[in-house]
Image (tube, rainbow, N blue to C red; front, top):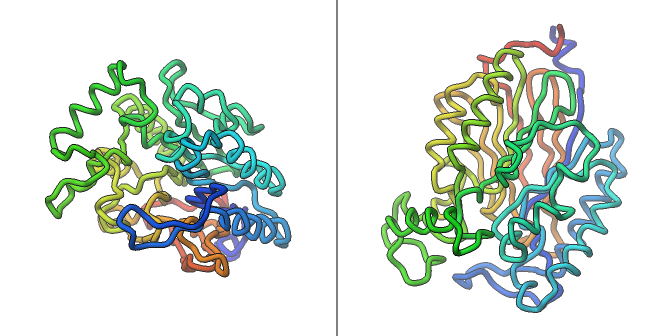
Length: 337
């Protein structure tokens, strides 16, 4: 058994919040953090070079959202900026799975994204399980290795972003956010310094339809004793991020995860400082990956994750901390069977 646990099964790469734009450096909304819009391209090249030159090539790459910055939109540069970044990613030694964040919706409508190169269900070779057809929800799962499943969730399924203002989804999202945020500018968080600060326009949530789909998928994974890693743009655990970056209905998604035995990890971006915690009830690891956009040009912000039978080992570069994610003890050792 010990020998089996020491066997490397596969690796994968992770990068978040590149937010590329061909503009001079600037600052975040509160003008407390510098943002390096052009140099994100070089940091992406550094990541690609590392993955390409590694002794064990990654099985896939996770791009955790906000691939280009919203400043591209008013300059009519959304398509050209996206092409620039995708050109770099096309040289990666493995398939890239894209997550959608708020900046994707600053640049494109949901219908445009569903037709775009950022829709990984259209442009990857691996067989997938997807959210119900016709729902417009960008959620899917794939299995890179027997006994392991990765699930990408749509954190802006319930949102003001990417939705037509005349749509029922937009109206419902507006009614929800207005319950907690009374500001004229909905990108400004509510004044209360508590969990309601998450109700801002740059966040979103998960619809009941998407949560039901996930619940069914995890039930199947439980039965098969699979190990599931969930990936989305928005963090869902208050201890792994700033409150202002949490998904609107994070409690509902946490409840689904806690009702199953198969989930081992949840990965997100969005909060550029990164973060980590382990859920006390389940042992599930919650990782928020540092953003490229606020990483100085002489540093890095990407990771390579090595997966073994009993753990995942994250090797971080630059601002990202090395971590070991031991799988929760409730997980059975199916990898040796």
